[in-house]
Image (cartoon, rainbow, N blue to C red; front, side, top):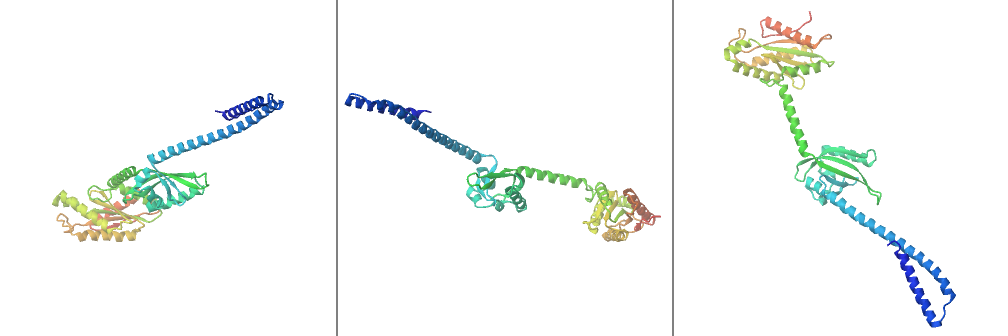
Length: 370
């Protein structure tokens, strides 16, 4: 009651004064005038004391209400913290968890005491730790107000767990200390799905760039690489190779043997060139083409000779060839000049190859500007 103190004190004063006056009236048979005039003064004092009591009582009730509300808030926060569907931790400036909720404990396989005895670096993937600590430092220095990071953790059993981390400052108003609250959402399944999708995409890309029969690069991929290399300010050469009398080979041994022959020649070319710099592709039918970045005509002719010798060393019988008992190849070479275009470079290699075929085959010809 708002006026409880004042009502109580006034009531007590009135009762006490009445008893006091009655006592002296009975004893003396009269009442002093002072007794009547002193009553209002005592009532005023009683009113003031009662008012102070009411104020104190009101403040006490407010404090009790605040304390109860704080307790309820703490209980609510504790319930939300413990039962949140994402992992939550309160972290100090060194990256050490001070509190960890149930979800985070389950996610990482540690108890809260075990987590609090470590730093996040102890169970974070080393490739992600540096970036995380740099962001944490920026957060504590006030350069950013929060950060979001996808990183990997190690479960207690060694399994890799992917988490999407959102971190922000959590100031402690009681002692001016600053902490960081980190929220971790388990995205392991999503990351695994993304990895499988990426692997499928890479496989599809590889297959789309691969010749179905020989397994080496196809014409489409060769054209892409040629476009990229041609735009560079570097020497560039092309070797075009044709298997001599391959139609007669198929007629003599059958198309299945012909396919096996193409596969063997393709793999031989792959082993002969430098795969870190050069590219061999199937150009079509029994024709192959080799892209040679950073290679002038002289170096290209050396590589062409190696290719020719590598095929001869296979000693694949070819009874249908009028020029040799074994499989042979004809080779044409062209090199990028100042005024060259991609089309002219290909055409020049083709012309050089045609010249090699005209000149009895099983030879190397280099294109020379007329």
